[in-house]
Length: 200
Image 1: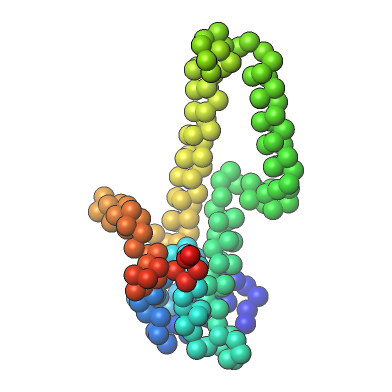
Image 2 (image 1 turned 60 degrees about the vertical axis):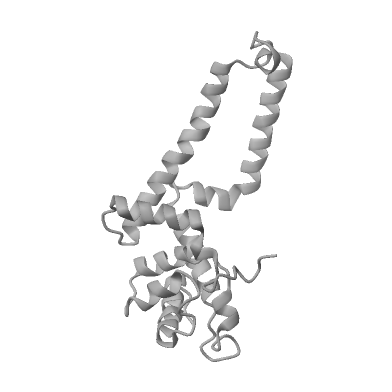
């Protein structure tokens, strides 16, 4: 096996494409069987189609101790993790969370504590009830960026991912089909409508 996650996932995907036992399990396998060769972008896209139900792993005859040592969900999870880090925006935040996650969480708690202290000890409102502590305008100033900036960051990240995966132009019918698929959660049915293996 390969040290590079994309190369290892490609090796496993090529074996799965030859076997095709798991052909109807989820959205990953129709995508696998539609091609014979897989670019790095293809592997990244397959990894992001996988939701790690592990149905293919439990059904696979080529898992350890077989010499092929397949664990497609694990291989795709490693590629998926790397792709999320690669396409995160603002650039550098993913590495920052890897290095200093506890520090960032601590700073978030500190900021929330200071905010609650300020609300409790300073008369900045003047209205009734909740608005006696904080005005509607202040709420808008605080929460508009909290709502809009993540949407903006997500849009930039998706655009970066789509270009890296080799995605083409998106049509209105593509968007309609994607939203319909997401609303029905058809890719979470485990291929047979029974759901994922680890659902309670």
